[in-house]
Structures are given as C-alpha cells and as structure tokens.
Length: 355
Image (spheres, helix red, strand yellow):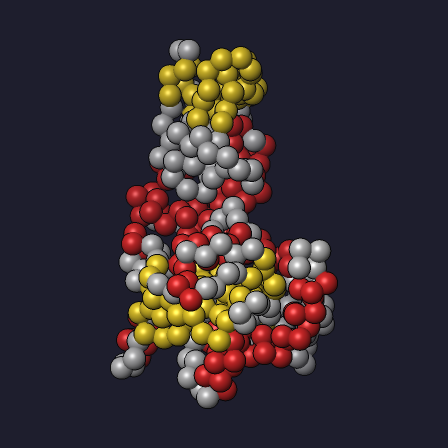
C-alpha cells in the first residue's frame, strides 16, 4: 500500500486517484521543488531529510493511481520502511499549480484512456501546454462581447477522438451548434490541429528605431510546394505549462535571438486560422537594445532550430509589409499594428518612470 505525499496528497489529485485514501502519520523531512508535478516526467519534488513533517495518506493501488504512476514514471521509494509515492528528483523552484495538474490528470486518464502510457509519456509537456491554454481560454474570454446565438447552451459535444497524437495532435470533434435562427445543426464533424498557445514578440530598439527579424526553415511552405520555405519571421514560441505568455516571450527572446527584453508592450491577440487551428497567439513589442552587431545566429539545437537574425530599420519593416514581402501572418499583423500605434507607444514610453 503506497504512502501518498506532496502533489498526490493534494485533495484535487488524491480524490481523483485514490478516493479511499486515509490520513497517515506524517513523513519526516521536507519537500523541495515539484513545480511541474503532474505536468511532465521527473517533475515531482525531491525529499530533503531532516526536520519537518510532510502530510501523508495511505492508499490502496487503484486502477487510476497505478495508470497515473506509470504515465509519469512514479515508483514507490522506501523511506524509513514506508513505500512512498510522489517523489522524484526535481529540486527546482517555482509554484505548483494544483488546478492545472488536476486537469492534466483528468485529460490523460479520461481522454487518453485507450493509449498506452509509453505513448503518452513523451507527449506530456505538449499536453500540459494544451491543458493550460484551455484554462486560459476559459478565464480570458469571459469579458468579451458575446457573438452568435443568445443563451449559454450553444454548443453540444457528441463525440471526441484523437486520430493523431505526437508533438502536435489532431482532434476529431462531432458537434452540434445552435444556429442563429435558434434551431440546432445536425452532426458536424470537425478536425482541429492542436498546438497550444504561442507568443510572438518583435524586438524593437526605440532609441535607434530598429527591429529584429529572423528567418528560418518552415515545413508548411514545403508541404505546399513553395520554393521559398525560409520566411521573415520574428521571435516566437510555445507557451509552456506553468508560464505566462509574457514569461514565454522573454524566454524566447533569449533562446532564439540572445536578447534580454526589458519590457513588453501587448499587441493584438488572435486565432490565426480558427476554422482548423486551436492555436491562439499573444503578440508583443519587446523593448531591446539592438546595436549593429546584434544580428547573428540562434535557436535551440535540441529542437532542430537554425535561426538567423537581421536588424533593420522600423521604416524598412513597414515598407516590406506594405509591399507584400512579409508572408508570415503573425509578423505581418504585428508590423501593421505597430505602424498604426507607434505614436501612442512612444508617448507611453516617454511617460514611463524608467524612460
């Protein structure tokens, strides 16, 4: 009978995985790390022996607890003669998000119940990012004006499947929508490409009035038969589980361009192609220092990124945008929005206490 501690002892996970668990004598020591517990492999906390008492719960091996442990690579550890479950070697810092971990547990145990744990395991970071994006969508859109038919009962889900799941995935939905005239549609089968939310940041040096662009190879144009699969883009990347879009923008600035961005100015958020993509984009202007030698090469080798950066005048960015030479949609959106809002942005910078 395992002893559940840490994230597994939290009510949101414990009641899902081991509803019959009973409170046990605490474990000596303290937990460190574990911000990514229940979100990725090796994300559970480490145990620091010594003073302190860790709440613990005795539980039988339920089917769901056993499957969850297999998915996340958890095995009991013998601590003072007790089989302790919920430990790993993550000693990093950060705040654990129990609601996100609980939603993740529901997803892998319910939606992916027919998939083997070894097929789910390498996908955990992307699945966690997708769950986090769903939670952001629910929280961030409540204030928006309501379009479409009146009432709250407007979309009904008849069936869900995942015919493809890898780094990205494809979901198949059978839906019914309430139509504008008030009646209901017949079955609608829709395939949705799932990639999670992403952040896009255009580095801008307001003193020199120049921006940084990058170019890199893209598979989409190749699949279309495009003879020019290298496009002008800007710094961009996925919003990982456990971070905000702003944190992702700052991280990507370092990873892709080696830039320390000092301030983010929010731009327009949008779905680039809502008929088939679940991707949602957070666009920013990033204040950065862009001297003549700022351009270079970047990208993460483990992600097969081969990125070259270019520093150009902001006026040149506007010119190539209006000339139709920007074929990357998020960059085009951001460039035109930036041109329309440049006076307001400069005024805000001038009024800033750090200006």
